[in-house]
Amino acid sequence: MKLKIGVFGAGRGRMMVEVMSQHPDAELVAICDVNQNALNSCKDLAEKYDSHVALYTDFDKFIEHGLDGIVLANYADEHAPYAIKCLKAGINVVSEVLAVKNLEEAKELVTAVENSKAIYAYAENYCYFRSTLEMQRLYKQGDVGEFLHGEGEYVHFIPKTEWGNLTGQNNPNHWRNRTPATFYCTHSTGPLLTITGLRATSVVAMETNSIIGKEYGYKRGDGCVMICEMSNGGTAKFLPWCNFPRTPHAVWYSVYGTKGMMESARWGNTIDTVNIYKEEGQKLDTYVPTFDFETDLSKKISGHGGSDFYTMDYFIASILDREDKHKMIDVYQALDMTLIGTLGAESLKNNNAKIEIPDFRKK
Ligand SMILES: NC(=O)c1ccc[n+]([C@@H]2O[C@H](COP(=O)([O-])OP(=O)(O)OC[C@H]3O[C@@H](n4cnc5c(N)ncnc54)[C@H](O)[C@@H]3O)[C@@H](O)[C@H]2O)c1
Image (cartoon, rainbow, N blue to C red):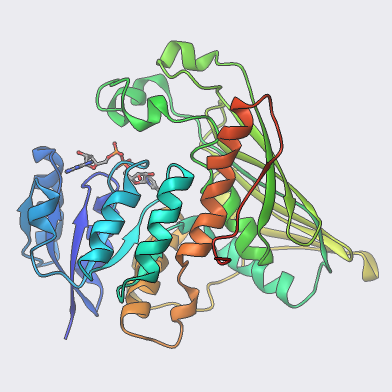
């Protein structure tokens, strides 16, 4: 029997509609959004794949539809309260980025996960880029040795002409206008943690001036840098979402180890390319790796280098208890990725002080 899935948020949620409507183990049955145009557009998309969906504008009614799983693609700083509602109702939930907006929410989310039989998954798709997965494989097999330093960057310039569409027509209360410069961080942090299996234990953050921001109407710096101590004693540098002109956008991960160095290529679609240097034999290699797991559907889903399939598929894998379910990102990993930015904001507020990052696996 197919899992009955609902999608909350019909903007980014279109991608989830696309995947869930076609997934062999899922049936997309409901979509919820207050924006009627976005809702209708998602309904049309679902019907293209013969999915007949009920439409809701109220989450509390949507959650009573009789769902096996809910995808949260609502506002980026409002995921935790809705995830907690799902978990309390015993409904499996997968959350778009970010997991939480503060430490209180982190505690409440972990408590809800630990008290629920339902599954919580985190949809950090950049952890499923083919370059991220390949660098994880290379790191695990010891090709660059022990981690010394690593970096993660997500530089995504949004032209002024597109800013209104992305912020509810320049609503100053939209999350893209009011969250701190450190907030949207897991596209930068998530892959490095995934590659190395390490976590950050402390963070220091500094932000740039806000020159582009003055024109756009947001108050944070146009960019920001976060420096972390890592759980093995190494260091890391992250650029969370920075609105610096660079086209189309620049996403980059690097790892320096005791035996060599590896990095993804930086610009646009080159993200799929991996460069690795091994000190032994002084060998340099550049290639585009393939995914080690593909399906007919994964080959059709091109969003974010194909990674958008895997966030949804591993959520389904966990609900169905498939043997590859461990590839899903759980709540503790989600918090490891998210809290770097949450506590980075505390560092900004406190004259760039070093802030310890708690490990929610420890009681
Ligand atoms: N992983 C990625 O690559 C990626 C890319 C883009 C966006 N996102 C994430 O997707 C989410 C949505 O982003 P977006 O680009 O669609 O923009 P957005 O945040 O402006 O859109 C959210 C949508 O949810 C709806 N919504 C919010 N609260 C609601 C409520 N209480 N009831 C009904 N509807 C509600 C809004 O009407 C809107 O259509 C964000 O969390 C963002 O971080 C992720």
